[in-house]
Image (tube, rainbow, N blue to C red; front, side, top):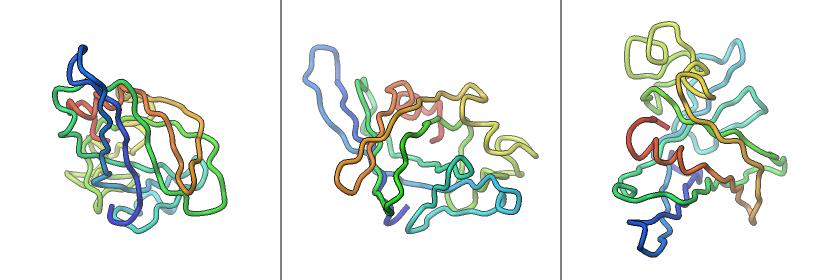
Length: 167
């Protein structure tokens, strides 16, 4: 991800008696998984703009969570730049159960092995959206200026920070 703005703003504690601290984690990888018959194999990783088109496009993001080590997350917000006049009313955010490579992944392949998402023939939906023990959180959109904002459940952030999830 080079020019698309996607940040996680995190409110966390270093230990229960400490003051809260706000951290911002920039996205380090992105892709748009297209679940349409002739586009399953397409990779949109590392593009200047990600396309979201209804439930046919799943945007996947990875964040550098090293700042979170030893901290407890109390709240998190995903912030993305609004690139058109169309409004996204809400989203479902999910962890991803399998490591993936930004420029090599698609709906058919995580881009880091023999094919598939975790095993040959496995497509992306099998490792996200509540499948394969992934966590999900549905939230309504807030718009602030030219940015979308979505609440993210702290458990999803903890899964990323501990390495249980891969995006």
